[in-house]
Image 1 (cartoon, helix red, strand yellow):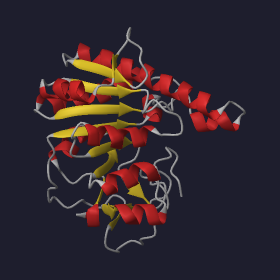
Image 2: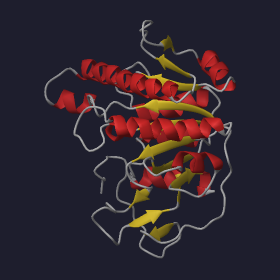
Image 3: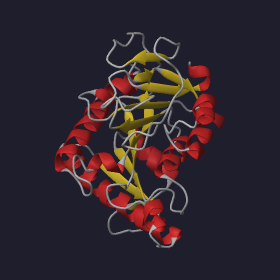
Length: 270
């Protein structure tokens, strides 16, 4: 079943089967490979905190501190921010708005989130650049891959806004595409739960969390880790995905370091 944040769905493993674990049980301490450069996918819904819409300053401050901590350890962090706390193109189109126009509205909503995150990061002393797929020179740079790479090499955080700049593509797909184009080694998807479960762990104490999944298994079971286009793009290019709890203290650093956190999606779940 799809969880309330829309990012996980029904999985078929029962407690005790390989690749699953009961909620709340200890996670093995073995280490995954660490990554030098990653793309952090941030859901727009998370930015709203406990509100249905808008931006929670407390959430943005938390996310900025997490990113700042990883940057200060020498990791290169780029972020793709969703806009679900502002607009959802698919939802708007169901109410009669043209789908393409609704998607463009959603893209503009992501830029609002980008600017909020940039502001807090810079207050924390982290140099930051916002690059957007839709040109808006007064608030951000245009998306230029080589320039983004150069910013990362200089220790700056790069925040990508406006998705791919085209309707019908999600910010999940944008995260995968940007990661491939800038040479990132993984996509880290921060959500409101600590991985992929077979039910909502906030309401089902017996929910089972997957420690690892293969791309093909995600697609076959139609697990909503990310949308199918994004997962396929990662699968075709062997780009790992880590789904983890964005709001846990230190989780971004733990994920980049390669500590076993959340759910890893990779080739043959290795």
